[in-house]
Image (cartoon, rainbow, N blue to C red; front, side, top):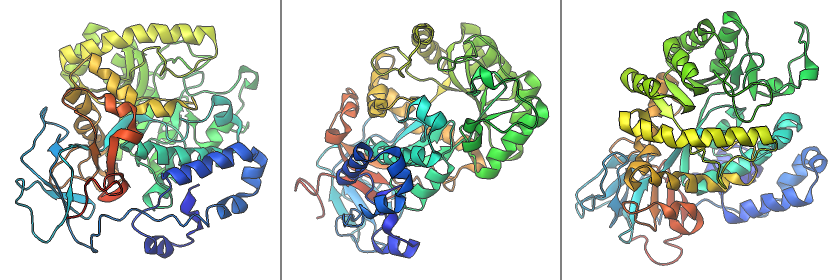
Length: 497
């Protein structure tokens, strides 16, 4: 739930401006006070009273430096990374009209009727994209995710969504969890957050990576109720072709932009070893066929070479993780044009917290594979996009930008940045007609693309260390032509001319 929920109608919300201020520091501080001082019972039992706390804030959205309604905006005096070309440009300005980039006119030659904003010679980059995110499951513990009232989980998710966009991530591909309501709230301006490309529930076989039931719930009988994780949309269990078709179609009906199938074991789960193969070839094909009939694709959670090869044979378009791939399998991915969504699992301070020794041992094993995976991906030129997979680890979401920056150990800073901008946008485009934002390009600064833009204090061609401190380094955040954050005008350094 967000701070502007006291605006009861869409008309009321529009009257207050083009967007809300749920990511503002004062709003986030309010959320922290609520979380600290209210018990779960009080939070859920007194939602109306909680929302009343926000009524006196008087929060208003940032205006775009005195623009009049419908007036284009020209961003000048910036060094531009367009999301694809591995160099910075200083010969163009960026013209924004409405929610999109209208043109890149030569510097100093933009239209005279546009409002102007001087970037002060700073770098302008596309809004960042995290292609493996869990919008509702990032900042809660596994115990909370699997047992708390789902309304409480969504409260936490709404707060985290505001913080996500304030880290410069204007779009995420949600690879599992009940994110449909949060996506709608963000899209309707009820609360602040990134665009969400939702997968819906993670579809898993019995004893698969998405089966969160304890063993004392077995055996399951046909008339038994669904587990809580299934009831709230965290996961969906399916055994056999017909069940996979059913669960896949349910997610598509809810608005999934792509489908997530669990094709192998994992580190977090207790009952499916890392090396296991999950879903038969026919079951995987069923999910692929159902998604393809709706014009979209399947991505699979899988680590091992054998699991990756089965996924590719079934028609899967994107591999999530894959750190235990071998050279022959990576070459196959390159030859088949498969996308590889690798995460920087390096068993360091940014790793998802694991309670059990056996889980931590598996983390170490995957970390060793992570280094080899990035090296093989680059050597064979496999198509790849950035993602973090921060999952059920409260407090780790703040490392999102730092995790992107650490990939400069494998590639140049601009190549790294491209994985979270232009390349990530290309992966999102696989959703085709199921892409939820009109099919406009994302992750690039180009005519026709959505105007997701960051002005940063930093030198992206040299290093990306500035991403570790977004509060200080991100001077302007724009999402869809709307200003989410601006510390430049307020500081008197640059602004309307």
